[in-house]
Amino acid sequence: MRLTFLGATDTVTGSRYLVESGNTRLLVDCGMYQGVKVLRERNWKKMPELERLDAVVLTHAHLDHSGYLPRLARLGIDCPVYCSSGTAALCAVLLPDAAYLQEEDARYANKHGFSRHSPAEPLYDREDAQRVLANLQPLALHSTQRIGDLTIQLSPVGHILGACAVHIDDGNTRLVFSGDVGRQQDELMYPPEPLPRADALVVESTYGDRLHEPCDVSALLEEIILMTTGRGGSVLIPAFAVGRAQLLLLHLARLKQAGRIPSVPVFLNSPMAISATEIYQRFHRELRISSADCALIDKATRYVRSVEESIALTQNPYPSVIISASGMASGGRVLHHMKSLLGDTRNSMVFVGYQAVGTRGQAIVGGAPQVKIHGQYYPVRAQVHDLGALSAHGDYEDILTWLEKTGQPPQQVFVTHGERQAADAMRVQLRDRLGWSARVPELRERVDL
Ligand SMILES: [Zn+2]
Image (cartoon, rainbow, N blue to C red; front, side):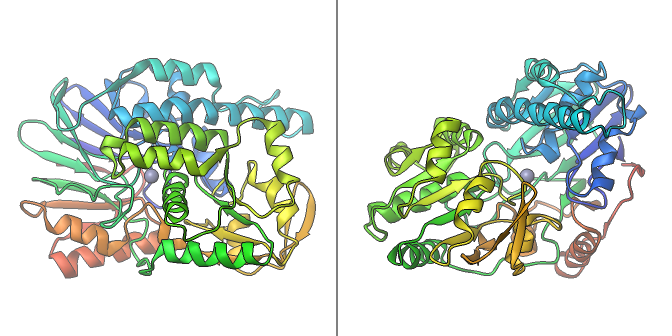
């Protein structure tokens, strides 16, 4: 087997790995680069390695693992895409939305006259996304699928609905990709399933150099909501539409049921997060929630779908809890709420996940006195809270605890999906704690296994 690292080598986005055996060519993950411009530019680079593929297999639905798929379709690369059923259901919502945003970007560039092409073209459009969705082939967990000389298998790793490690076997060697690995303790997700055996392993390192501070999230939310609504304010929570929004809804529904917070309305104002919540409820048997929990969430939540309802909500003067996307306040409906709520000291703004460099979320958490939204500056007077402990990624202790249970140590270990410092810290942890010799590979590096 030969493995080529085509993304996520020096950063946390753009996951793409080519696995070859004989004539078989399999791509593991087909992620989009996100974040700073120099990384986003990579989405436009030619990738001759991807011109002939027998199949793609996805670890999970997040766009940094799936968002380049419609680009392949646009380039005429057509092949089956294997993934778990949960991943397929989430991709059906995420990929058309990503395509719509690409179309919007191209329209904006044309209107304002800056573009690499003339006229500006989207990276892909909604038709490309639909072509990919028609190629999705859901696989049952632990079932095996033959692709040419290779056999693949999926096992759950927590993180978000449908997220799996991908096991690839050529009859001699077993190569495992961790994908994004979830927490050992999570209200919504089961802990990652131990790996039975891996001769070679590719492991993520998003939090390779950090630990999540232990905290009681329910108690913190309770305290913030009581304090804020007590002074007549509202609580605004920017949240990632898939995963974090559902975990928050679960916490809030349980707090309401237990009478620990007053009966202020809880609004979920994000069409994407509402669709994801419906999918989470449909797949609740794969999660740590019962159908009664799903009903509890519906009872406790007001879903805001239309633009008109969303505008009306920004003018609502009464205390409420509003969950809205995007999670780093980089776009979406949350910006409208920020404009109306940030300037009032009675309100609170709560951040619940990783805030990337250069985002409004990072600026506010870092104490910025004002932020620019839609071309205007708004003062930050609301109280700001950072609940990073709600992350969907395990920290390095979570990952070590998971890997410790592996049947036998892999002979080769590659650390990816982390900023350089985090990836190297993970490599050192694997060496010192588990005695595994690991390497941080370079972009486009090829290794024979
Ligand atoms: Zn992910």
